[in-house]
Image (cartoon, rainbow, N blue to C red):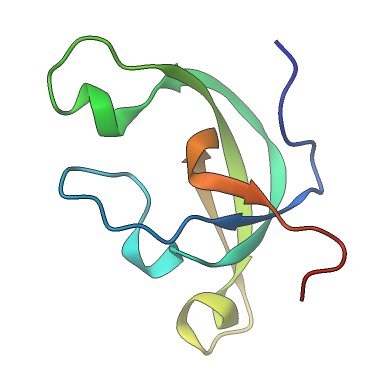
Length: 95
């Protein structure tokens, strides 16, 4: 199966606050980043943590965020490993 996002793709994380476990940090919700590379496929932790035993397997991506975009300050970057379902593409015409 081909990766949905290539290295260098501009993405935004979904802005959701589920009533259950999620590996998408609150500080990164709704933020824009750049895919560094695919990290491989893994069970979606949000589902597997609920103990259902039927967690989908998704691509995990290393995504780089500017610290300033996450916290309003800082001149460094943060890289998070995020499941594909947390991400959406940022189109060229979006700011």
